[in-house]
Amino acid sequence: MRSLRSIGAIAALLPIALAGCVTSGTSPSAAASTPIASAPASAPAATLSATSSPTQGPSSPAVTPAVGSQGQLLLYFVPPADQGSFANGEAAVVGADGSGRRDVAQSVQASWSHDGSLIHVVAEDSSCVPHLSDYPASGGPATPSPVQFKAGDYYFRWSPDDSQVVFFRRTHGLTADICQGKVSQVDPTAMQQDLMVMNSDGTNLRTLATAEGSIGPISWTPDGKTLVWARWGPANVWGPLALVDVASGKITDITSSKLQFGVVSVSADGSKIAYSVSDPNSADVYSHAFVADLDGTQQVSLGVVGSSDGDPVWSPAGNRLALVRTSGTGAGGRLVVVQPAQKAVSDVYGPVFQVDAPWASVSWSSDGGKIACLGAADAASGSSTGIVVVGADGTQAKALAGTAGATQVYWQP
Image (cartoon, rainbow, N blue to C red):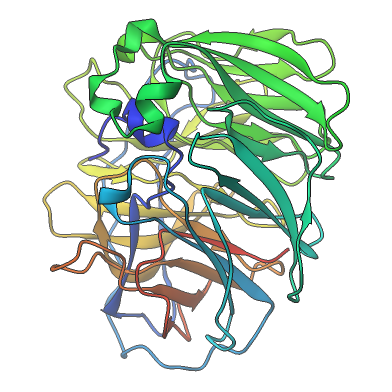
């Protein structure tokens, strides 16, 4: 069951995982593949539907430490809760085989450059003014950006070629309260923020759109020409999914209902989108995964009755999706891989523990052979028990030492 994404969670940009892999769980020696029934291709984009739950694959041998090194994983650790909403956490890297853990920088956000050679870091000072820097992936001093931002600018997203950056700029009512960690005291009807875009060097800064209320996640299409935006609204009045033309600022809604969309994943060729969505006004309290064409048509449900889906993530080849599926009975869930074209789901790893937060954290290796995800929340601290790397076929799972407390994981491109 997905919690409603709170204003504080996304506004403060604390990337805590919605679900992760339990490091003490078991992994099937070969992933069990079972068919999934999908909604008709002509189903309206506003319709939420789910299918009967497929049979999960059997549990088999315990986790084995057999995953070799394949690049680095970028991790993010949130700061202690008593440091306030905008306190910097810690970005770190570790080898995909668990070796060479290294802290990169204190930050509120970190992401890879398109070629994996740099780490984009966003850190904030005591006045909540963000400062951007690029750190070499191999280590070494940072190159600070000369761009001067305003207090409360946040949610930075680089284009696929790193030539442009989008972010949100608060224009009314929130900056001081959020900076002081008083999110719960903020009146959501007073919120207004602009969707901004600029070249990476700070030139050609302009406003693409103005949003009232809380904002939703944004994803770039691979050609860097379009944004896919979950348009949330004031007082938790959820908005439709929309396409934003970066050159003109034209906004085209591609769903008609005001549903609660998660982070949208765009396929490598830009033709398909995948997302998890729930209807806050429905008796169905679960979130369900869907696949659709980029324009919102040809929507197919991947969800199953009685389970909630985390945000799906396309494989590099664009033919599979990884997501965390959690049982509504409280019995836990699994990391699964879905092949939409074959209408099949493979049980990969688990059991999976769901925590109260806005996003799942699942990341594919560049060759699509492995998946990294978060470990379960520790019963005492509530923090992640660490990162698990597992073959996309469910074999060779390994829990990475020294990664406890990570809240996000991104595989090096």
